[in-house]
Length: 104
Image (cartoon, rainbow, N blue to C red; front, side, top):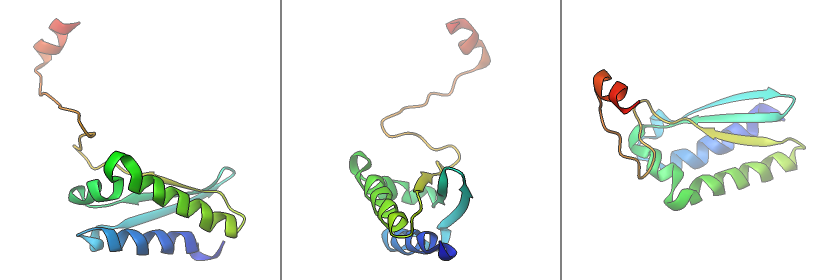
């Protein structure tokens, strides 16, 4: 597939969705399984990329599959979780080493 028409497409769409388009980074790797696009965005924009119930991320993946099918390639999307990020609905409690050992 051409440079990365799939990569350019993803960058274009994601930059239109986020508040910090300058922080959008798309890495592209190709192997025997197909094309893997790895998306990194600003931590503040993660909610916009994931969407309610993951619907925006699902839609991005569907669109990338369509772009890939047009060029006889299998395209997958991985969204990098920011450092220190929390999964939706997950509360993380800081614990001391003693607390962790006592729980065991």
